[in-house]
Length: 124
Length: 107
Image 1 (tube, rainbow over the protein chains, first blue to last red):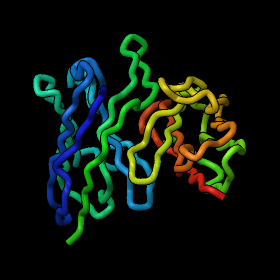
Image 2: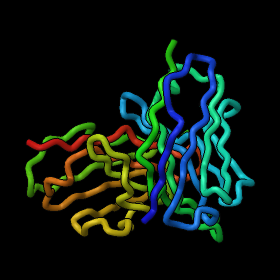
Image 3: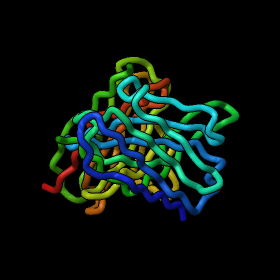
Image 4: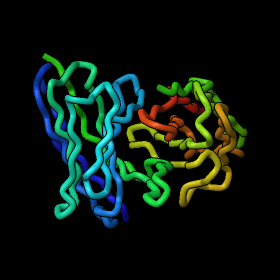
């Protein structure tokens, strides 16, 4: 079974940094594009970052570009999200997702598996 | 950025009823749309991809339809396990945005 387990969340002050991890199992991690999605306290879902299967390509929305860095270690089957210059609006539950991506067509279809999430609170 | 507008925001229904949730994109997304279900306290789960294709293991009472800017998720004969929140998400160019969600509650 596909399993994604996030960790690393917590309480951090504005301007601070935090690194999230996502341990993957039950599938060939190195073959899949992976993403982070967050859910705000108001229950709004926001795509945060995506990384290609080999790690060469990364994508971010403007809201986190330059502050967040997605990376992966395929040898350890682990996905990361380094967050810096954190703001109160970054407060959310952060989910790791496996992506349904057709490399041949360069086409994304969905986020087909989600972890249970790790909570990040940015507050002084 | 493409805006995704879901309606209704909430819906109170009885077991056995049929419901339709709609998602409108601010521009043509060429059926690059997914639907997710989220139960209370759980993470979202994929229901439908490419607007009309059911994900593995999703019951056939769920169906997706639409094209262009207008999409729908229909649930026939609601079961108790179907209550929760539903979200649409487009995949037509980044940023991949989500709809605001529809909360399905028991009447």
